Amino acid sequence: MIYSLLVLSSPVSGQGAQTAAAFAEAVLAAGHTVRRVFFFDAGCYAGTDLAVFPQDETDRLGPWIDLAEQQQVELVLCISSAIRRGQLDATEASRHEKPCASVHPAFTLSGLGELVDATANSDRLVTFGG
Amino acid sequence: MSVTVTGKKTLVVIRHTPYGSSLARAALDAAMAMAAFEQAIDILFLGDGVLHLMPDQDSAAIGVNNVGKLLASLPLYDIDSVYVDAASAAKYRIATYDTPIAGQFLDQAQIQQLLSRNDHLLGF
Image 1 (tube, each protein chain N blue to C red):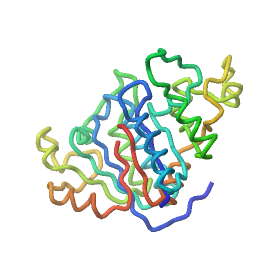
Image 2 (cartoon, rainbow over the protein chains, first blue to last red; image 1 turned 90 degrees about the horizontal axis):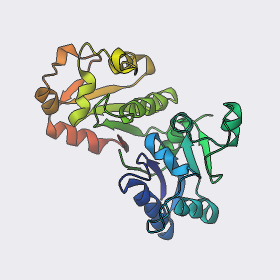
Image 3 (cartoon, rainbow over the protein chains, first blue to last red; image 1 turned 45 degrees about the vertical axis):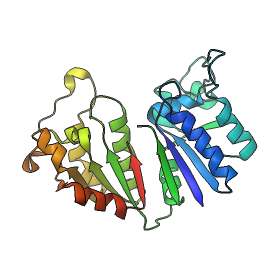
């Protein structure tokens, strides 16, 4: 079965974002496909490469990087949600004349069309948070 | 980009207040994007989400866009139907004749039918 995930929760508030990463891992382990994870609204903070977590808390970014690099899961941040939250990749940082990129390269920035496509072409779309 | 028209029906469920967070605007943006790509899309205002339908909204003092005016423009985006949780609307004294966009007011059983007959639910 083809799944897509819509992540609305911030990684630093509540469990939604962490549950989404665990769900994606479980979906893949069960032999299904994850077409795309679309991060929207506060969910876009998941892509930050600049956050520092205390050593006694679980790493929020690591599970997503593993999904992207080891399982080739596509991670897309909604571009309009992301840039207003300071989540910029190198292209956007340059375009908006900001001092540095803040998004980890495992993530891409794109428009809501990616969510529409994920919805149209997945058997299940599962929302986390909101 | 182009997206295949699949014949699937998607329902955007809005449960949050219009000015309490950015989530509500995100939901409307998602609905408008779905419609722009010619997907079959409906919206359900549920629980506190019915506050979107308050008449005569004025958001100038808080520096954000007027959600009522945005809703009034939804018919231009080809959004098929707008549904409203009638019990919550009654709680907030929102009358059927006075909303920024015409909606169908549904009771609990009708809401259950609506949720079950859509292929995808986007819960905001």
